[in-house]
Amino acid sequence: MRRGQRARSSPSEPVAETEAGPPVRLNKLLADHGIASRRQADLLIAAGKVTVDGEPATALGLRVDPGRQRVEIDGVVLKSREARRRYYLLNKPSGVVCTNEPRETRPRAVDLITDPRKGRIYTVGRLDEDSLGLILLTNDGEFANRIMHPRYGVPKTYLVKVRGEIDDAALLKVREGVQLSEGRTSGARILVERRGPNHSLLTVTIQEGMNREIRRAFAKVGYKVLELRRTRIGPVSDRRLKTGRWRELEPEEIQALLAGESADLVPARRHPPSRGKKGRSKRHPNPHEFSPRPPGPSKRGPRRSSPFPRSRRP
Image (cartoon, rainbow, N blue to C red):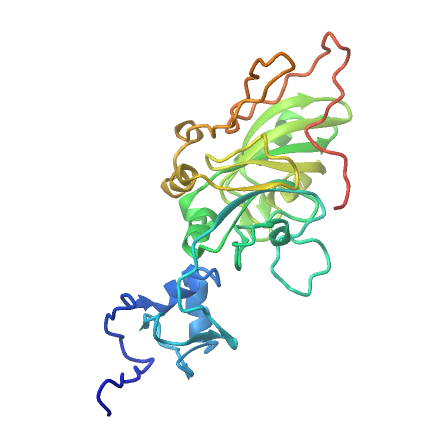
């Protein structure tokens, strides 16, 4: 070997620490690039879909030097530098799907994030096409796993409209858990906001999140969900975020989500005060607080606003 020539490292051997940075586990590298969570990355590695310097890397626990080794997954080369981690909060409209499938013809949640720096991101969990509300998007696989995995118990809160006047017996069954095809739900915390002959409005908080769990759980006890909006993810909420809009998460929100803190521990997001006609500042509501207005007429007549927008496909 000539002087100054660097020996090529075998993908089956650990890589020594170099000036480009310390070696990292291959599954972590994939997670940092937003490819998959570490557990899912291990499955991709075991299936032989990942190569290092052109050689299949099937050994779990393999360490690589991302600055000097070529890592490919299904023929796509990962950039040598580690992508900056991105965290977004999106108020998803109805009619938008949570998928990264490039052949999807329906509007995708990832396409609503118009930040040119976003890179390859994906949704943390899912909201079905007909549901709307808050959803997180990121390129950080570890963060996504912490939010989605039932072991960490990150609660998600929804505003749910069901058909008819729901009775206490049905509420008790959903609170205690109902049997679905995947197993029994872990139950839910339910607050009744409004009951009426045509529909009932509920605030529902769950921690597990099976596929379409809330819709299926209420259908199991005889009530169809008419509309569903997610209003909070753990301690994160933002009532000022309009449907279809997004923003980046604040650092304290990211830390609170990872730490499993309650909503009361997350400081309110500061918004610049708006000015009225006479220059007086208007007080903005706490974006991390959810308290629907109580029903009833006002001085201006009956209130006709709804927490759900009119259904309109983007």
